Image (cartoon, rainbow, N blue to C red; front, side, top):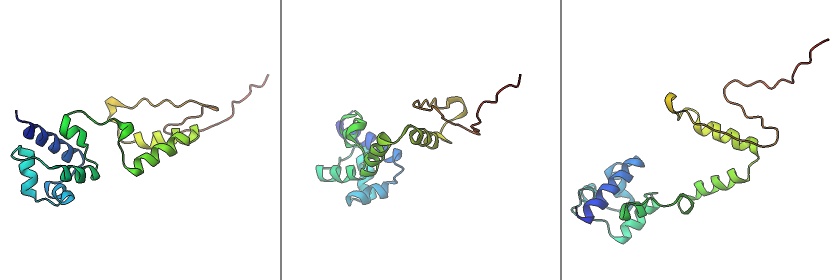
Length: 139
């Protein structure tokens, strides 16, 4: 298999992962839908300027070229990096709420996420939660 075809296949994977149509991907780099089709079929390959423009659209260019995913720590939009910084600085209760919000509705019934957040107070809720003081028994 030639390298242009491998690049094209991985570019198609990235386009679908990000839910771009071929015309939308072409628009990112100033190329036509036909050009994107040719890239994906391995007829031609994007040049360096086009690859740089694709990266601005959150395409993992390292993966497209080499087949190896870029490390999460070195990738991410400004919004993602800001979200990560805010999460790291947040108190444990906020982290628990964020994880709950991000995992709600995204898990299939057979593959529910196992979220564990610990810290002072250790009050983490899922579903209906009521925080009552323990009742004392009368003697």
